[in-house]
Structures are given as C-alpha cells and as structure tokens.
Image (cartoon, rainbow, N blue to C red; front, side, top):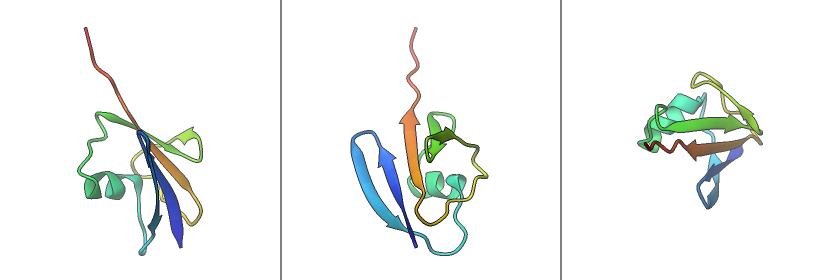
Length: 66
C-alpha cells in the first residue's frame, strides 16, 4: 500500500505501514500544521484524516507577511 506525497516541487511515493494520519505524516516530516495546509485528493482535510492506499497528499506552505 502506498500514497503520493507532494510538498512544494517534490513528488514522491511513500509506503503505508499500518494506520497513518495527516498528523503522523506532518510529525514524521517535522512540519507544523500551523504553517501548512493539508490536502487529500484535492480536498482540504484536518490532521486526524486517515491516509489510505492510492491517496494523493499535498502540503502547501502558508505564507505570512505584513
């Protein structure tokens, strides 16, 4: 079982070992949900969303400025 991960210009296939949530993936990548928007198959999702076989997960950096 695997899913596609997109971050910025990087795209990679990753294996799923057991139950995996968006939060688990963010923690594994040392990313914060406060600075990233998470999308699953094109839809914005919450951290508790489970990643399943064949999903496309995308993290989009939130830009702060003033």
